[in-house]
Image 1: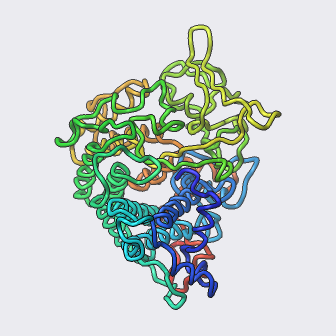
Image 2 (image 1 turned 90 degrees about the vertical axis):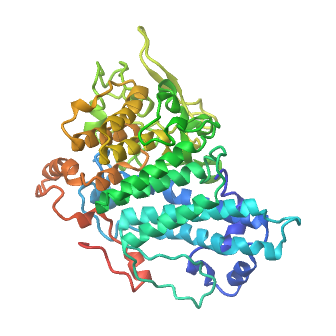
Length: 548
């Protein structure tokens, strides 16, 4: 995805917009679309455009529009609104009062990516008719398979996000090639949407090359297996279909057999026997935990990241997870910021070291507690110099020196490489699957791999009263490990822990605001987002989610 939104690529991509509106402008766009995708150069541009649309969706097509965070975390206990800077969309999320006019209730951006994937799937096999294999500008069979696999996997990934955020949704597997085609379509059941995602990803796995280093910026073997494991875990949890946990385990093992970008097999010992393998050495070392975010190509843990180039794409000005201390809209929630995790002599408001190696590589703990609203820089995804605490000096984080803004002591805009999947997250998800299938001993083993790397005390199976208690420990570890990576809300929904976790938080917020203290409520339909008004207006066959 590097620099994919360059002038050259944009010039080509404008020829084949993925939504019907983009090709309705006759006669120019229809002719250009008809003539597009006839050689390797155009295929390269189309693939780049597909990834570009996805990264714009997740990281932002404008300031603070990182939908990965809004959809995957903002409704959870990880974040809360900044009281001094509120907007309607943020208030709705903070009080669980979503409406159809919310800025983030629009699924069009994901469907735009699906449209680009559909065009690739349809037209890639046709390229050889125009530019035969072996001639200049031809697409080799190997590259055709690779691009088709990536398009299928991207379509499956987008449908997975849609199913998790909105539930039922229209399934479109053909591109719009003519203005005479019917654009309106009713919603398919969420079970069918998930099945579409599974079918797409399974086909992608069959086509993708195995036993090669993870391409990181593109969807390869490791990413496909990770997404499939994630889909099966989601379906198992939300439909109570225990057989899907076993399906997920199949894909975890296939992930373990794949290669990291460094060439290391992710978990060679864990490929065959369920629960076997796994070691701290499989992961990025704890003292350099942040390396996997700032230099993912050099980490044994990396699976699939979004490459956001600030020169090509502008500032990755993301709500909540941006490095600076004054970003509005949302901030790390008080309980998490103030207490994560107090297993040693951690003193927030000072530079005293904490046991958990992740804490000070994630956010600014040196802020005075009297200024909690302002000073919570989230620097997990940003390049900087980390200096560990010693007997005479506290921990320190220094951003790069200013490159072009002399009034600032650091570079205000840098590249970010946001992880979609990485091995530690998959290890914890695997621990959850093992726990669900009755293997608490190995579930604890994989949980302890993450704890050991973090430098926090390990646990034993005997410490947990039952599988439910162990599951909560795994979810808590995922919260610490993966904060900012768009998974916490989905974790709570998948395990049906939303009311348990969010009720006291929402009651406290409602009480403080002078509103009725109703908490989360009993309606699980509210797990899903409403459909945006503009989405409803664009398709008369859509039915709004209840109870919106």
